[in-house]
Image 1 (cartoon, rainbow, N blue to C red):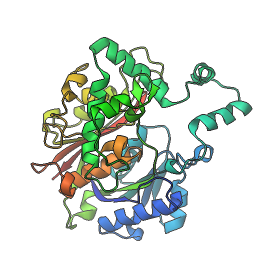
Image 2: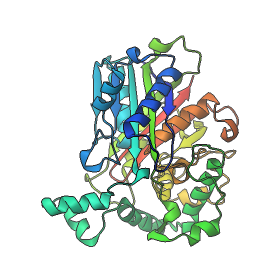
Image 3: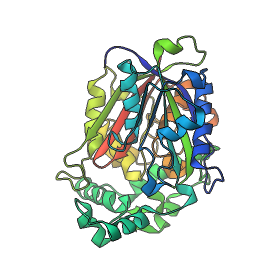
Image 4: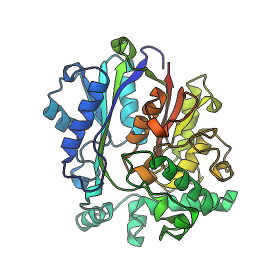
Amino acid sequence: MPGIDVVISGIGQSAVGRKLPQSGLALTVDAALEAIADAGLTVADVDGLSTFPGRRPDALPFSPVGTMDLKDALGFKLSWFAGAMEGSAQLGAIINAYAAIKAGLAKHVLCFRTVKEGSGGASWKENAEVRTQRTRLDGEFQYMFPYNAISASNWLSLYAQRHFHLYGTKREHLGQIAITQRQGAIDNPRALFREPLTMDDYLSARMISTPFGLLDCDAPTDASTAILLSAADAVADRSKPAVRIESVGGGIHGRAGWDQADMPDMAASDAGRMLWARTDFKPKDVDVALLYDGFSFLALNWLEALGFCGVGEGGPFVEGGHRIARDGELPLNPHGGQLSGGRTHGFGFVHEAVTQLRGDAGTRQVPNDPKVAAVSNGGGPMAGAMLLVRD
């Protein structure tokens, strides 16, 4: 998109853990103030707010804080704001902010994602059961809920099964993703799980929804992550390296639901095509990949969708873990991803991408001075992707 260049000027993250004593709003304030300070700005400079999915009273552990909550807490004076569930998955909040700055609607937009799922509360299944008692089901859920297919693990496992059938993908391939990412988490002090993981550990974990075992699923957590976007000319004199948003891509695939005619294809492929169509960079130029891993299969799917390997070649690409290791040709989620780091629900990947491009990742730093990062979020019918470049 021509016009104003947009950079990620600041990043922040609260404490990450299970059953943290802080409220969702307190975690959000911590992350927001850290991002603003990181950018060398003040609360008065921020004129935009964006979040996914907005405050959800029907599912507060999933989304306990909205834009108005944070505005009131910190006293922002806004010219633009948005909190939206429907968009390019979790990255939709950042892509919306990127577009708003490009359009001149704001100069500094604080994007945030907050979860309190590590503290429990009503699960999606429990919320769904309550809703079915007082409303009539319609759409795709009328075919899922009677069979207890309420979890995303049920829906996505069908895509994985189809991929296994068509291309010979194995559980061991998914296991390699989990094992490699655990190696990164060992060097991430914020990660939930930092003990070494073996293939035997992976294969012996209890089954959740075939072919997904427990270690194929990300871990609920309490956390808030804030990403501050700025017009490049508004932060030209900052001391930290600028990380520019080179390109974005988003997609909604086929029908707006999980029942697709071309499984295992997903919206990731649509987002990938759009991402590369808007830049002169190519997959071979990417130095580090921060790819969504709500389930291990999603990371494998994103490797294919973004062109790092061919369709159906994700299994052989990750086999042995050499290519996706920290010192491999395409380091994958060197912070541990959500499988080991905890479900920061997408924004943690952007935080880690900026950390890596700045060279601030310490013992988990990707070697060879990375300058280009690919970031992705989502799976199934909606997805988003970004290409970040350190100028």
